[in-house]
Length: 274
Image (cartoon, rainbow, N blue to C red; front, side):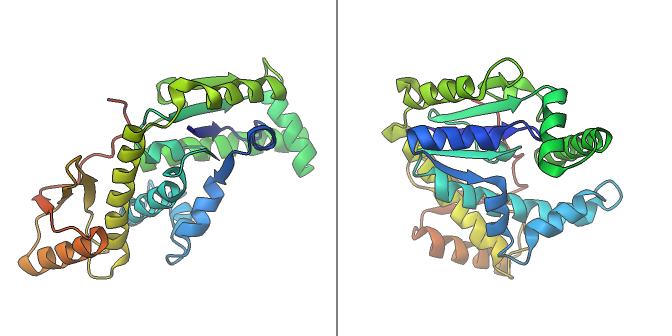
């Protein structure tokens, strides 16, 4: 089964769409908010990141120190779910946490402003003017969030495999389209694509162990697992004692002595399809 990532605009009807998919396919569901609850188990990190974001232009260093552990913990929480596939995730930029895979489908749901304003008025009891202000503010926050977290513009269509405009179709039509994708042979998980996700998951376990251990929490180290099972860590130059600690933590998590540490800098966060 595939993994469906739905990037939602503010008040675009995604929650109703997901309810329809679950009723018709029994696909599991996880949201951005679910991931934040898991991340917040580590010292309310998600809440602190959101608070810092509004001041990121004037306090970027503080935000930057929280960015890497937040990404690591969210990615690990997401992989805990998607490694079993047959799931739909909906948020606004969570699909950027993982590199695209054969059975990952990235969907963007949009809707005309007038439709979103009407839904905001109905759900939140706001005036039309306040509803428009709310939508503009939240949209701006989400664009800023993706730019700071992933250096990407979530409005860029190249980041998605499918874009659905709810102004040109009914909820049922959109549900039918995604249901057909879920059943399509081209998007089913294969042993090879599952193996790739398993390697991503093991790498995320190592990264999580490093960012949650007080001895290595301040060191930005990324992990990658090769097809032969070798764990390759990339991070800054370390003193001997720090290096020993990093290797100790990584070996304990991976249960593997085949680990390399590459001194340098953590690689740029990649989401592009190769």
